[in-house]
Image (tube, rainbow, N blue to C red):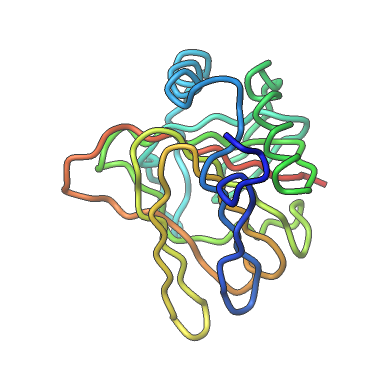
Length: 198
């Protein structure tokens, strides 16, 4: 692939109250299928319990947290595992593509259409006031939903195998995002959200 083609550059997505950009394929020496298989095999997946509106629920997906710092959200505290060689390689490629530095990554494993991510913002204090979150997808496509907190405007993006989505600026302050369950047959998907923990 030509590194200077449009496919190799982040393309801005017009959005109010924040910054959003999409790269169709992150340049890596490994195939997407090989990255997917290795991440599934090399990751110590966990099925965590979180607190939502005062009630405890099993997350509808598997997760893992790697990096330099612990992280807490929804009543859950994640102690960081070291970056694996593959995660470090992916982080370097994501940093080069986005121009931002990351020291941690949350991995989400959506096993099928019954797995989902509730609407939320990545606005924990340790992420800073305007965090840059880089979301890298492998495997089956899923619809990523953004909803403005005030206007309720909705934006839907189909995130496909190898897509890299950058959320930055004031986006986390003004928007919620998530992935709904689907009854349609859908394969497994991995999503890695790289972030910097202060």
